[in-house]
Image 1: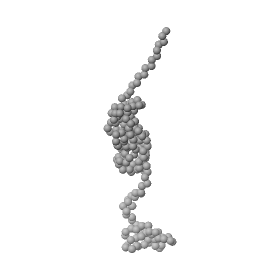
Image 2 (image 1 turned 180 degrees about the vertical axis):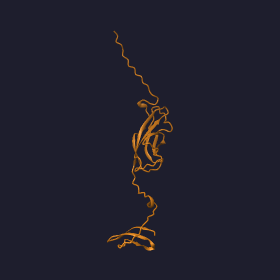
Image 3 (image 1 turned 30 degrees about the vertical axis):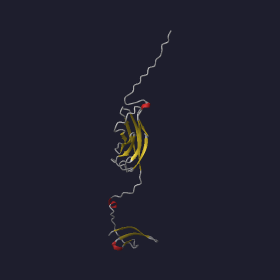
Image 4 (image 1 turned 180 degrees about the horizontal axis):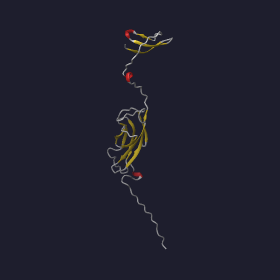
Length: 184
């Protein structure tokens, strides 16, 4: 009695926007974390990456890679092409990146697509770093106008200076320290 043969049939259906592992399009150096100093000007580099083409060697579609989503939503970053398959995420200057008042971390979804429809999607996490900034004064301090009430005291803490200037002094036993001069 002949033994019936067993056949294994495998059907592989490839979606046109996906490829097998060896043919995949890849964003190289992503996912990653990039840092940018707060208040950076437009065009400041955040992170460089490249694209490894799929086995078809089909070129990346013009306008890709691109940031398709961000968390939180922002227009503070964009992708520019450096050359061939080399790219860079830079600041746009459309939104000020302020460590003290704004979000400090952004997750950018970077999407690339080639001419045969092969795609890749990776995340770049951008951290806004704090910069030691000089203080910014408001009102009269910002305008360099200081209003004084002059009161004489027996200790002579305030006196009339040469040329009609008032000098505010803190007097101690060893020295007299001038704190500020204001035009009369």
